[in-house]
Image (tube, helix red, strand yellow):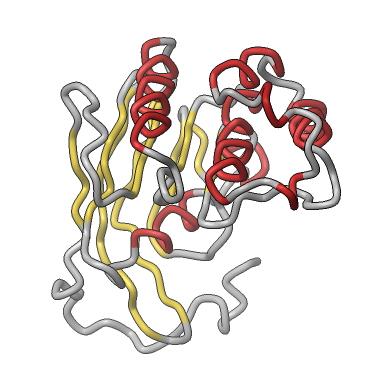
Length: 218
């Protein structure tokens, strides 16, 4: 399992966010996505997840995103700034919904790893910000998907839970998974590599068109 990214560029609202990004992530690797605020980290993750149009090539396990969008997305679990939970449902109901949708990993394992026992029957809207984040991240475990794209995943987590989540990432990679993590903190992951987005770097003679406005979704 390998993620290969070649010459990736992305526009939003006609403005170039980043240009000519090329990197690879191999099986068992966790790579940090670094850069100052506004450098395009969230945009890059969303483009890799197939949620935004971009120029360049994204290939996961030999399958190009442009050729088989659905097949690539079936291998990806994305965790963004929002926790993607239904506030009216309990913690148990939220996680059960995701487990059935993904038909992937164990609910019991996710429940244990993210210490959800104490809030299992609580409505999600009654949970604290940190508890909601733990529930949202538990989706990763029940997804059973090899590539995790994580956008500031430790926001709202306390120090102990952050350390626990770092161990969860290590375990995921030790079992052949991969992770690309946008974060400003040191998670203490072993032998980590970095992809750095420099907002001052722009491609020469950049065209002033937006692929989305040019029907880039087709």
